[in-house]
Length: 78
Image (cartoon, rainbow, N blue to C red; front, side, top):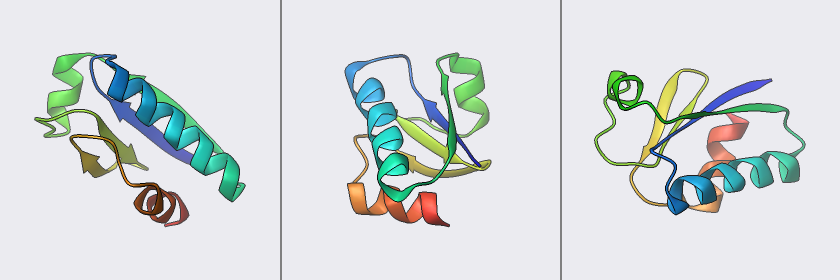
């Protein structure tokens, strides 16, 4: 199971990113645990200055703006 964190204050882009992660995982048949991290101090620990951010299995893979679907699928497969 992949552990995915979506980092952001809860804005529309953050919500869209969370939905994109869940949709991509479902499409690929990958089990994911998605956690929304909205606490700024916690987000800062990942070194993210621009949200939304995505962390897959402890590794920051994206920061700022909506991720591209093909990149998201690559991160989930890794």
